[in-house]
Length: 379
Image 1: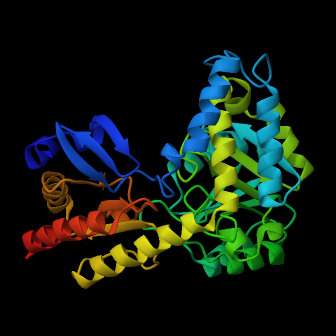
Image 2: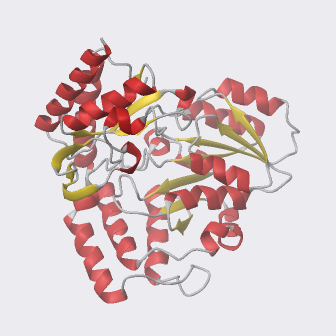
Image 3: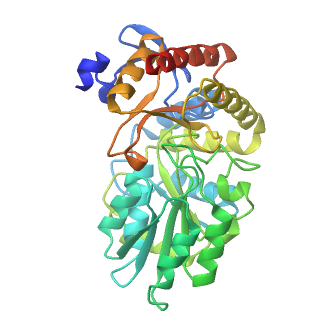
């Protein structure tokens, strides 16, 4: 059905050539990228590219070993220190991917007598980390601190509890009610972990994410993030003030049994983090573009998420309409992510956009014109 309605394979699209953070070639045609998670456009940051080339020349193409063996270089320890300072926390652990950061941290930090309380709309990597742990798992209603509190009240007070949420959620772009969640965690003596994958670089005075934006970094026990969105490369991390974070280095299989990041990747990530920290104009451009496209989509009468963020999920009536809409967008020169059940909250069929600071107004107007055609199809 997917290929019949789209004329292509939306889940296996091949980008033939990249021209910029916002423009690529697919199926022999130029397209505007509206589904890349490249929020700040740093994949083409000149300083990051130069740092990667220099490290590649100096240290080779890879480490060929894990952090527990021969794969711990000075650059890995250096970026861990940089991450700790970036967030104003004491400790950081670097992972090879963002997925491994969630899987590795969660599965290592809790045991069989512990309890995990996770938001029902959590990312697959959070669910996988929970499944790999021996902890008892409870889900609470999405972004509902009161439901979380009710569930905690029924649990043994002496048990160690870890609450797991995201800063900005990856499908609809809604953000966690973090102040209220912090209050619940403190009231019941629970630990709180926030995955800032989609809020790093997007929110906060220096791009530290939702917790920094709300002045709550010191109230969060563990912050997990990735380099594969705003930072524009690959990698994952966890930062914290807790001594317990060190146990991850000895207990997380996702840390112990995979090769460490190539030095060239670490170098590019380090340069991008510094750009994020020191250049607020990137966030200003991102939010100007977010305002423009969010308001434009709403003016078209499309059903979008409740919070204005650079992640915008447009809900379609059903999967067939979503597939047809995706095809119309691609034929109009616009690529977005296709998100279908069961990977979506509430089994929604979504056309998912991610806004970039590098999008031009002309590109955004083209995107809105394409969505106008999608809206016309819906009647």
